[in-house]
Amino acid sequence: MGYKIVVVGATGNVGREMLSILAERQFPVEKIAALASRKSLGTEVSFGDKTLKTQDLDTFDFTGWDMALFAIGSDATKQYAPKAAKAGCVVIDNSSLYRYDSEIPLIVPEVNPDAITMVSNKNIIANPNCSTAQMVVALKPLHDRARIKRVVVSTYQSVSGAGKDGIDELWDQTKSIYNPVDDKPAKKFTKQIAFNVIPHIDAFMDSGDTKEEWKMVAETKKIMDTKIKVTATCVRVPVFVGHSEAINIEFEDFLDEDEARDILRESPGIMVVDKREDGGYITPIECVGDFATYISRIRQDTTVENGLNLWCVSDNLRKGAALNAVQIAELLGNRVLKKG
Image 1 (cartoon, rainbow, N blue to C red):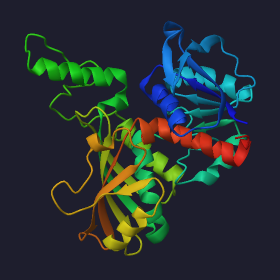
Image 2: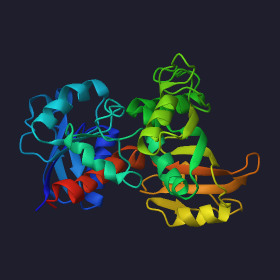
Image 3: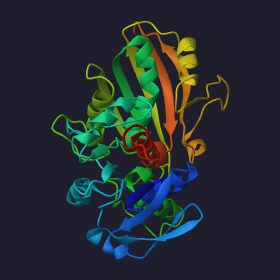
Image 4: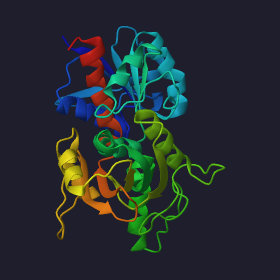
């Protein structure tokens, strides 16, 4: 017996990835519905070897459905997620709307699977920010061994994190560089993204941090340990898909780089590619379409007593969004609903 699954926002980048990953991982689906806004009504999307026509989110009845994977913005989620939850359909939400609600679990299955028991509070589970998800997968096994005191992270985030408009803007601006007559000024981003980097993702806060940087701090504490100090600088780079992070970690106890490498190799969701030679590391273009979070450049930081540096790369549309949501659905099915 399988589950009755709804994918909300099925025509967007993340929604399409959700459908693809559900099929790839052979999630036990009895029935599936693809929902979208009225303007996308009837659009065809793929689910394995099947083609689904999108249905109208506004009129859809969630009664009798087991899980709804939401891949729409916070405003729409605020309107529709409570309706689904009230109808008995568990919502797995990819927006930021519920991430900081103390009654709603924020889950990365490799890191804090036991938080799934909190689903009974409101019938909603939050999916973390893309940059947080891959980082905590890398941090958790090291934290279990040596206790992390402080993390300094600089991100190199692809334009797909800003949605289809971000991808289109990079593509159009890149072409316009070679055709100056066809100028493409910045619209989605605050400055030109082609052949450039922008140290600004989301809105600025009074502290001087951006909301994206604040999210990484708050979410890491909620998912892993409130005692961990985190400081982040989040940067948009001219890459279509795949987020990268340079992570500096300070531990309470000494952790040798060789032991850290061994720990990470044995940890779920991680692939270590760390050779000290030309090309002996993973870049964003190599992680696209993969499930793993890749770790490279593991080395001691001799400027602090117990420090390590590492390089972390992952497909942000997968582990940073759709894959993590599907993994939460798998966890929900195995531990709570138990129908598959």
